[in-house]
Image: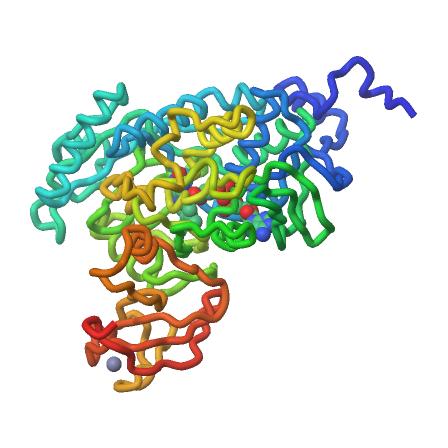
Length: 427
Length: 88
Ligand SMILES: Cc1cc2nc3c(=O)[nH]c(=O)nc-3n(C[C@H](O)[C@H](O)[C@H](O)COP(=O)(O)OP(=O)(O)OC[C@H]3O[C@@H](n4cnc5c(N)ncnc54)[C@H](O)[C@@H]3O)c2cc1C
Ligand SMILES: [Zn+2]
């Protein structure tokens, strides 16, 4: 039967707008689901394993940039249930290597236009990003980063304590601090975003272009015949596919093992915590590598805290008291005025750490089996550019220049990327 | 808190230990090929489940030990005194 409300409208969900909001407000009509539940087909042109920002963005750009729409995204849980729904949503492009800077800067460019492109308010707030230096050594690394950034056209500079105080009046910049602050790398284009909205926006846009999104569908095996991938096995039956993309982050080695591909990846939990909301007072994102801590304030007023990964590899996402204790001590060393704030929540997500703190993207030894993994503690910001370049990789069979440094073969060849100085703590 | 049963000191908070990582055989540095050596350096099994790994009791007896741990729950089954760095 024809649904009269749909007549004359393009397929897919209704556009979100102020008018739509008003209309729904006064008519009390329910919103349509942002994406549809589809029949699981027995065959797809492309199967993407993992429904985080990476898998969904890859599906979206496959459909939008290359017209490839016979695509399924499979997730063993719910969309955004992995790192994409657990991260602290910091975006920046002030990396250390030119490969890294160019790559992440393209991602920020895509993020800046994303709300309009996806018709979804992703709340990208460009509040600026400060990485503190408490030692001569880190000041040197920051000077190095600032120069690499500038050469790549990225706004980034080293500033002194008085400028830091101007940006963050609550910071203790005295010499009495346990780790006195000598300076900072200031990166105005950095900021925070609403991570769930990014996931949902990509999911909704991919769905409206014809991509199938299947939640509660776990990949349990990958079929390879004569060196070529032929399909996947799932908890809901087998699916034939000439191309399978592994975008499962913390679970990446488990999925790659199914195809007989070994990855130099180890899974570590990363924890974060959030306080009760307070009036806006913290303008920028603040990161201290020495103190293993970073802080930002959300639009709702909560302070979001993060740290380095847990000290040992694990697939468990239980929080620990050691984390909260260390976190509180380090935050107070930076901003003593926060002593009265209470933590509301604490959680953990899994991070797929690589030896050089750079991702692993592109083809593997098995034809048709591609990886987009190794996102460690810093991969949310890369979602758009990884989706764009992985889609190009799938569609053309060639590896785009922007990701040529990130191939899996670099480990066997000893060509590591060396991003540790810019990615070990500041995600 | 996770307790590791150190064979010398008894059950101790995991915070006292350094995590060295999963057990793997080191190829002989003289006779190995470049590929074998790099695989040894970078590849991990990254098991989800029971695995044997090496820890170092840095704030205790300062000995190395081998620990069986389920990486999905962090349950620890047993620990035995392990080979030290020189012998491994
Ligand atoms: C606490 C924390 C803070 C972070 N902070 C930042 C930050 O500030 N900035 C930043 O850029 N990055 C940050 N990150 C890192 C970032 O969250 C991740 O790198 C990024 O979200 C990875 O996205 P993804 O889509 O690759 O993977 P995920 O979002 O983890 O998605 C992988 C999906 O694969 C699914 N899956 C796994 N196995 C299977 C299977 N066998 N079959 C089907 N599906 C499967 C999972 O259910 C999951 O949904 C942080 C991470 C954490 C945990
Ligand atoms: Zn001991």
